[in-house]
Structures are given as C-alpha cells and as structure tokens.
Image (cartoon, rainbow, N blue to C red; front, side):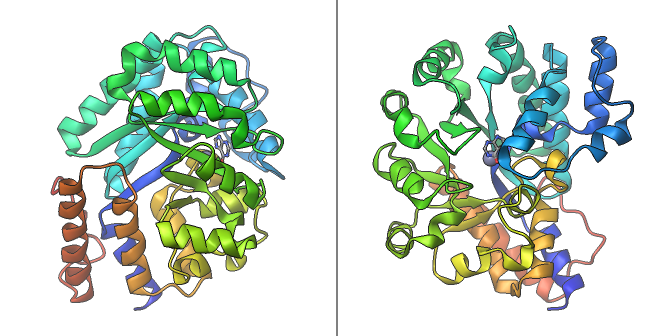
Length: 354
Ligand code: HPA
Ligand code: ZN
C-alpha cells in the first residue's frame, strides 16, 4: 500500500484510545481563554508563546508545564469544555471507544472538589455517547510523586463517583517512585472491583514493569517501552498478552527516543506483544491518535496488516465487554476490506456506525 493509502486506512479504521490524560488535551487556545475568563495571569504573552514553550528534555520538564497549565481549569464548564473538545476530536478521527485518565489530585490539591470536575466530565461524556454513539470509560490516576496515603484518601473521596470509573492508574514522575510504593492502594482498588493500569517502563527500568505486574497486579502497562531491555520480561508479556499502551509522539517529545525511526514499537509488534498506539498528552506532544499512527507509519516499515492489527489490539486490550469488542473488531475488518478495494475514498468520513 502506498503511504497515502496507508494514511487513509489509518483515518478510516475504527479505533480505541487507551492511554490519554484529559489534562494533556488542554489546547493553548483553551488555556488562554480560560485564563482570561478567570483573570489568571499566565507566564506567556500569547497563544503562540504557549505553543512555543512546548519543548521538553525529560518527563519532569513536561510535567512542570502540564501541572501549571491545568491551573486554568476552575469550574464545571471548564472541565466540560476540556472533555468535550477531546471527544469531538475522537469523533473526527474515528475513535469509537476511549478510556480516559484524569488526575483528581491535580485539582483537589488546588481546592477544586470532585463534584466540580466529575460533573463537567459527565455532561460531556453523556453528550458524546448520545450524539456520537461512542463508548467512554474513565481511569482515576494517582500521582506517584505524592504519598500512598494521599492516593488512598483520593480513592476514598471518589466513592460517590465509583459508578463513573472503570479503572485506576498511576502516573506522574516515574523515576524514584516505583510501583511498589502503591501496593496497598492498588489492592484496595482491586477489592472495589476496579481494573488496574500503571505507567511503567517509560523512563523507569524494566524492574518497574515487573513490579507493576507482580505487586500491583495490573491488567495493562502504560508505555512499557523499556521492557525490551529484559528478554525474560518480553517473554512474560508475550506469553500473558499483557497489553502495552505505547505513545510514540510522547516518547519522541520527552526524549525517550531520539527519532521515531529508532522506536521499538514495530519490533514489539513483530515479537508478538499486545501493543497499542495512543496519544498520551496530545496538546503537548503534537498529535492526537491518527497523527501518532501516521508518524509511526512514516518512520517505520509498517504494513497495512500491521495497522489493522494495531487497531484490533486497541479494541481487544480495552475494558469493553466481549460482545462490543467482537462487534468493533468486525467493523475493523469491514472497513479494512472496503478501503483496500477502494470502496472508501480519501474524503470519506465515517460517522455514527458503531
Ligand atoms: N507519564 C507520566 N505521567 C504523565 C504522563 C506521562 O506520559 N502524562 C501525564 N502524566
Ligand atoms: Zn501517560
């Protein structure tokens, strides 16, 4: 398939996104508008200046800006606007299911209560479910630079909203904050019936991926790209088909890799691991889901079948019920065959069919 046709296939395929931080979808224009609305003085003189500040040399250099940016989110309408903008983007890109991380502590630490952000999220999610016929799950993520007791308190405060939440996760500064620090809170979350995910092996070593598996009992690993440094871990991930939610443009922007041509996602896929592509923090890293697929396809020798497998993996690695997984994988096959026979053209937008 030519590059143009591969890009067309990427755009038309129904897909799921499994690694996305809602706070990382805050576009510079919305940050600017909300700062004006709440009379907040930003350390930037224009929307363009915000964009130009997005150069990072590590995860921490990004997180400093990401937490500062989130400070403009103050009332329910702000959280609605943030979530709605992302869900519209999903619809535009044929993302038919998404599992969205949110960081309660980023907001509760600033005095903004669960009631404020959950109400905004809920309104946007209900609107998208109705208008776009998509499925949307939420993942409550603990900030790992804070203590385990604070994570436990955060889980307890979420109690009135448990029915809106599918899983818990672990994000923020990885180095020096291993999964072992959060064993108790993950076991409490499991007892409540939540699915479990954790960032591991982004900047941290393969031992952190082992800890996430053996001590936290996670269902998926977020990132996990450093797993390739440990052959026994690779064998384990393959044998148990533990999904890795890989984020190529994030890895590039945070200098986990120097160039996407050196990214190991194609090798991980060829080695039989359950790999998916995701956007992580698209506003900060220069692309939503389709742009991540396209960037990888430009730099690595991915085939049409690789793209189809990555889309199918995104569905099978999700927390959706089996029936919807089977339905969406069937839809992927139909779109793939129609695209390869030219029944869909480049301009076609597929909507509301899933
Ligand atoms: N890694 C860790 N924490 C994060 C990230 C990430 O890529 N994005 C938002 N919080
Ligand atoms: Zn992430």
